[in-house]
Length: 180
Length: 110
Image (cartoon, rainbow over all chains, first blue to last red; front, side, top):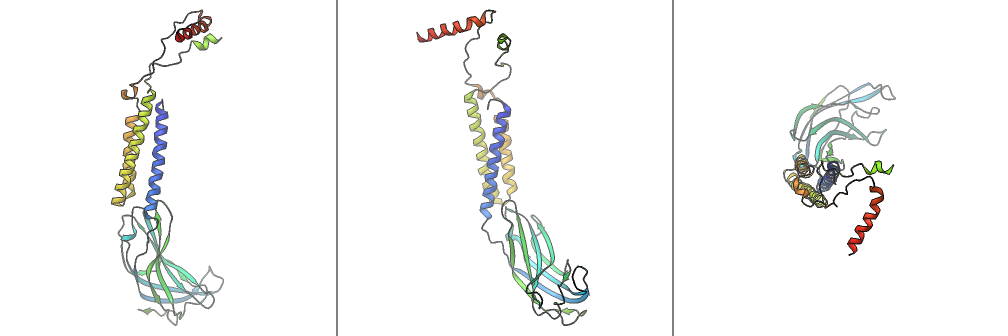
């Protein structure tokens, strides 16, 4: 500690260790929080088509079109350890050929500081709702849920499902829209 | 050949250096400032729920510590080491030195 460089080294290393301890403290204050909030999903229109799916093994697959409304208040999730939320809407259903199918229809990134009241109306799905086969037609139970991935400043990245889901049925025949 | 190395000055009077008590004081000062700013930053950040402010307060504490402890201020030079007076350099110094140290030791015993 007799030279400026030696003191600067000691000071910097000490500051870095203290900073690491503070970051751990930030993590520990939010590690056991429940990050789920109630979500309201409403579907206004569904339709199916039977089209060529070049990514699949068969000639034609079912393609679903869902128009929905989303509303949720995400404000309680944001604390000092949350950098952003990655929201995604999943459709979950079962067919004769597959017991469980999960398809992501839509997603959104909500940054810290953005508007946290989610109130979207008449949203079309962002990604293709292809089925592995022809199992969407007249399917009685398709469940839509909104989940999110919490991206923290320090710590674990949990996947949280919002409380609230919407079940819907697809129409019996192709190219005919069903309104709710 | 040893005479060549002996003639190099071994201490520099031009650059101010902290003495040992000053170094200890400087270390205590910067550790104290950093810890206090860490506690203040943590509490404030937790209160307003923004970790960015914790980092800003820590950086402020770091800057204050740098200014207070990196340059060798006079308050860190209050207890300088008392060196023995310099021995005048003569040509017969190498032969004289062991005898002188012996005579100094004799003086101390008395």
